[in-house]
Length: 153
Figure 1 (cartoon, helix red, strand yellow):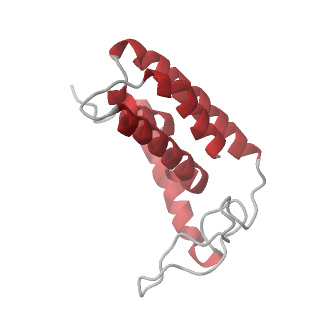
Figure 2: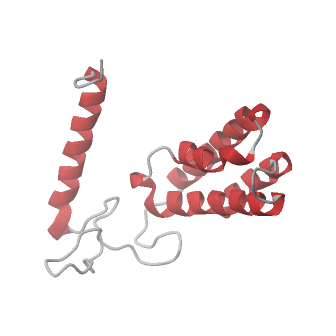
C-alpha cells in the first residue's frame, strides 16, 4: 500500500512551497499524511469516507494556488488506484498487516471482542446484529441525502 503513498509524494514533492514551515517539514508532512491515509484505507476502508478528499484537505496548504488542481488530481488518481487494488485482494481472516481480524464490537465489560468476524463482515456471529443496524442507518442516511429532507433553506 505504501507504493501508492510514495507515488503521491514523488509526484507532488517538487511543487511543495514554503508556507510558514521549511520545505523539508512540508514534504515530510506530505509523506506522513499520504502514508497515514493509505494505512487507514487498508485497515478501515469501510469507515473511511472520502479518503482522497481528506488527504487533499490536510496537505493543500503546502501547495500554491496554481498547483492545487494538479495536487487534487494526483491524490484522486492514486487513492482510486489503491482502492481498486484493495478490492482485488481476497477477504481472508488475516488483515494486510498480518494480524488476525477481530470483531469490532465490545463486550459488556468494555473490552474488545476476541472472536473472529464472519467472512466479509466486521462482526462475529454474536454481534452480527450490530452490522445490520449499521446497514439500516446507512440506508436511512442515503435516503435522507437523496430526498433532501431537512436541507437548509
